Length: 295
View 1: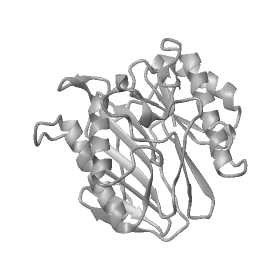
View 2: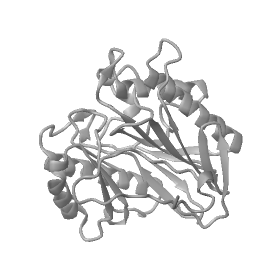
View 3: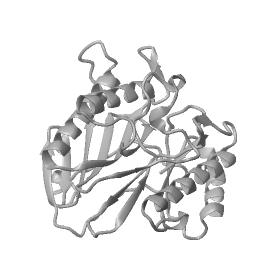
View 4: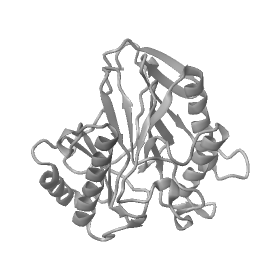
């Protein structure tokens, strides 16, 4: 009842996530100085300006054939997104994916791996690269509900950023699943005010392709921040001048176990200092041995 006028036309995404103790409910709002217009494409609600388009959708997992429902629903979601972007002339910049039970096995396969198959099938069906210049992304386990996908796209070309400390996610060996995750470590693009925006993917304690410090949340936090620092250095190199540092970022931290929050908070304060701008959420991460993920 308290929704503002016209809210039904806005791309609003409500994800069922647990708030860690002491954290307040959060509504993340994106602003643009450019004129905006709303639109719909199938299940997608979106809002677009001359330079950017933001959209989102929520889909129930439905079994339509022999494929696992999450795989089929993911492919359908991404197919809808690519149809919209192709029609409007935007390039995919950043994806946010949320669905329940991300680490659980069903249909003889972990659900995160089912998601990766469905996502890559949609990329391939729409002629999208799955290696090299791919968008930034994250995938987290929600507390329940549907498959939620939000995305940001840019009219200008998108520059993908990799991390020299890590094997690119799209080149992970098959031990992590039959299809590699289709995302870059970060993406750069011109925003509406002419500035270069950096969107960092969900980042964790992975060096090479292996999880480090599987039982030590402080060491995982430190390693994650080392990875983010390496991504910033590579982004600054690609941008041809230093534009980004740890203090200039806005952080979203997904914590697997609420009991770890105090230690994570202290380590982040040590790494970033007083300029730290952060939101904490409780969520399962794409690998069962990862205790946190930061975007």
